[in-house]
Length: 49
Image 1 (cartoon, helix red, strand yellow):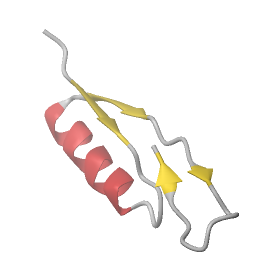
Image 2 (tube, helix red, strand yellow; image 1 turned 135 degrees about the vertical axis):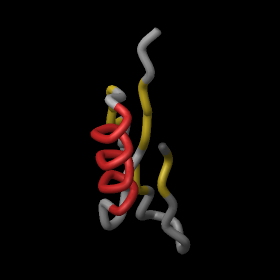
Image 3 (cartoon, helix red, strand yellow; image 1 turned 180 degrees about the horizontal axis):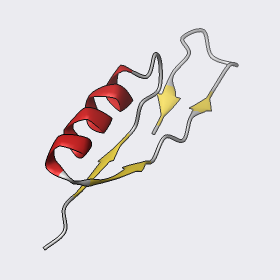
């Protein structure tokens, strides 16, 4: 059975660095699913993943 990590790394890429290290050590496939929609019309900005 193959294993995979699906992740989203939005801001500084720290999650991506950790996932890459784990995947390399454990021979796991990775899939980056970062899709960002920033709504700027609101007073408070938010992100949808």
